[in-house]
Structure formats: C-alpha cells, structure tokens
Image (cartoon, rainbow, N blue to C red):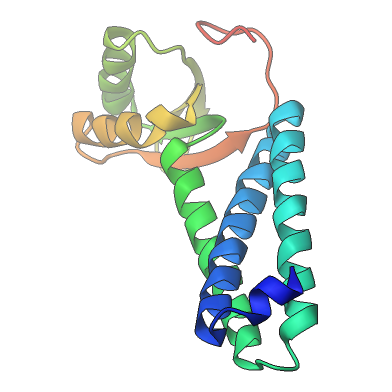
Length: 180
C-alpha cells in the first residue's frame, strides 16, 4: 500500500486521506446515534466499515506523515468535515422518537387537542396551575421526523401561546399508535 501511495502526487494522497476520514467520521456519527437508539445490528455493521476505513487511513498517515507534514492538516480537516456531515445527515433522517411537553391555557389547549385529533396523534393532558393562572400540560410522543412539523403547526394553531419542552425518548412501550 505504501508503495502505491508513494507513487502518487502528495496532494492526491492528502485528498484521499481527507475523503476517507470524512467517510469514516460520518459513519462513526451515524453509528453512535444508532447505538444510542438501540439499533445494535445496524450500528455493528457501520462500526465494521468505520474500523476498516480507520485502519487504512491510520496506516497511510503513519507510513507517509514524515514525508508530507501537510497530510496531518488534511487528516484533521477530514475529521472535522466528517463530524459536521454526520450530524447533518442524522438531523435529516431524524432517527428516533421525541417527547413534546406543552404547557398552555385552556383556550390554547382546546385548539391543540383539536389539531392532534384531526392529525390522529396520541396525547395526554394534565390539569395544572401556573404562577398566575390555571394551565394544562399536554404530553405527545411521536417520531422525531414529525416533530418540527407538528410543533410548527401547534404554534400556528394557538397563536404561539404555548410553552414547549422537547426531548428525545430512549425507550417506551404502548400508547396510542405507538406500540413498540
């Protein structure tokens, strides 16, 4: 392998290492997200790919770093780009489940419930008291892919008169439309 790399122009070796590092770290980011969400087999397959790429990249770095110190810069650039790309891709595919906790007055709660029923989304409402007025807490568990749209719609429905806490759900069982 080192003979092949030494036959290439140094800038090409730098670009190969950078590209491989981008792929490796992007895969690593997605693998970590899948592990956290309990998708063990997919995470293991991605881990195998990640490790293979890492082995090739690190052996290239060790074999040629003395001859090409710029290679370290490209290695680091690939790492940083891979982190950015991995988190961007994960955000787009939106793996997992979200929990929305909404706090709203009675009027907004009625509007939110109408919206949720119309969209066939499960929810639970609790009566509560705020510092000034009677308030309600609405719990909604839904696929993370739907969270931004549902939240945007709810804010529009109740004229932004709702307090929202969004969090990721690691495990759940049962529930309306959410049996897992």
